[in-house]
Image (cartoon, rainbow, N blue to C red):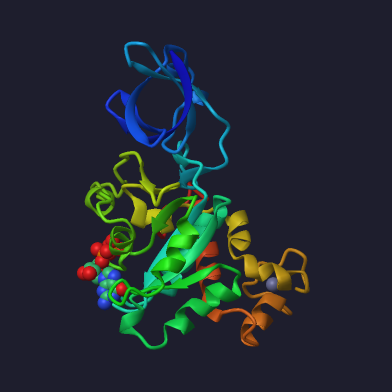
Length: 308
Ligand code: GDP
Ligand code: ZN
């Protein structure tokens, strides 16, 4: 009987698929772990497994987590669901064209990453279709995010992206059709992702809750695939979290006239002034204001007619 460390790749039936020593094997939960919700095993968890003499494998223990990615619906009672453990970064992908760059959507994705305390990189893909791709990425570079310009078609920027993924667990997100699967498949041919296929909405507008999956990626990294992946940008962010989700505002917010300035309509708002002077992107301030408004509506469950 041996004891080893493994990483949980997916939930299958009553058990788990785990990765250990370069191979993927099936494991069952040890009885003790099955009881008690606090010990719930998540995709991405580092676990201790026992390999018994008859090759039966059991998960004995869950190691402390570096992060937990949560899907949240503010205002709903049971609105929090754990999606994956130990995600290191969110990779937000947008296309320079086809579909058109949607800065508000991109800002939502980066904000959800920030609200989950996850670092984030921005990828501007399909640079072959646009000569001014740099302008699209610049608000994010200004905000302090690493920005990678890629073209799957011209094989541009792929080495740069690969370096950002190396040795980390990354969650790819972004609008449909921007080239997420193309990027991943080009970087690692043979990768089988489930993403787009399962992202369905039921009639009530709720999303199906199929759990996430992880794939070994580039030797020592992992890529997380969640069914509702492209909807990550719509996950809830609480009102008090919205400002923190725009990290570049902090440098100016201290100079607003009011300590509790929300940077909406207040006089002598240093954040608004910075946007006017081009020190931060107006599009980011607009996104912040829209998200703040939505978050406030959503966090008041007794109000009917949520905007989203
Ligand atoms: P996903 O929904 O984000 O996974 O997007 P896909 O990977 O399915 O790509 C959508 C479409 O864009 C496909 O037809 C791809 O061939 C195309 N595509 C992906 N990357 C590029 C690129 O860099 N340049 C161009 N011109 N097309 C691309
Ligand atoms: Zn302000």
